[in-house]
Length: 576
Image (cartoon, rainbow, N blue to C red):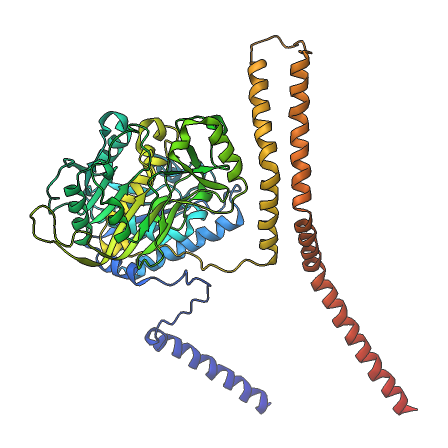
């Protein structure tokens, strides 16, 4: 009796001490957290904390998350929870400057109505953010996309910064081309987003209030202006420059200076002045063989998805673009933004006179295994290529420890005839880049969390080899299929007809139809042969993963059974 009473009293005292510890001391213990994720996604970067400390006025954040939407995948559901946790950390770290409101809008509710009214996307349930500041406008993130997860901190930071600083950034435009008519659509969008200042081509200086500069076709600018651009960059100005080995608007435009290649070399890059990129994968089939243009439609996989320039970007169209490459002894950081596919080659500008030569080069491109960079971000130390100044002016800055430049090897992408083919692509790429170059260091320092590159495993290497083998053999068949389809469409145009229609039995159309059926079958056979070893290895891996745990459990059970049987036999021998 005493023993049970003593035990009960001990448990009661232990429980009371535990409660007293939690009530008195738990609030005084340090807040210790461990981030065990691979890329430390739950740990704030120092730049994020610095941005939160610079908030001057309180803001309200409304996070709309339709967590019970049946159209939402498990991966998106996990991502939505991560965004919620991150926003809570923002609210906690901001010391009262952020008021977070978590909203789960039900269908046809007032919350859902407000979300749609603010422009949030509801394709797979609401997953967006609305920010407000008293006395100012409202900003939104229409939808958080899972494939843009590395940009999450920048997205939220950008919204917070724009709420604090709603004024439009000042951007200066310095162009060697007349863009008023040929690029009117882009200029209109630039004027909506920025306070756009147009500078004269022969500008002797850049105003002090200009911190971000956009230069188009500097080959047509005088040497004095190139010197002004160089000094602007060395003084810390941010630059986005469009250069081009062949401008389709004015292909015979003479170069006004010879120092541009030296300036590029000072930045650690080079661009062949007479070579264009020809791509077998990204060249639209309807433009192949055009003797006056080499157009590329660059999809999402041709972009650096971990850079702000490609934020919410789906496609970029370039035309007669050049190729950028870093110099071997460069000290600057060369970050590709837009690239061709691995099936691409460089075409001499003089080869544009022959459509047959372009087709031949496109066929040759299918056999290549090299990507070409069309746009790149350059950061790092640089030096002046005008050490003695220019035309009697005293020398300017001779070097800089850090420059910020984005170079695009194409000017035609700005023009309406190319820009219209990608309404949310080319213009958005330019706007994203200029906006990022114009923000202060506190926001620009928030860099995307790019995953660490790992060496490919055996399966990935086999897939790459199979892909190259398929592309090598399938290129000619795909081009024949494209030509057959075009010829069939020409001979059999679409017409309005009755419900029942006669079958055209002409010999030529019948032959084309047979070719249209046969070529896809041959392509399917080629793909099956090229990926045969890959599929066998994938099957082995799937079987191994599927049966590994059951087989292991069976072996453990068998070993336990044998052990128990051996002990019973020993016990029986001892008894006898």
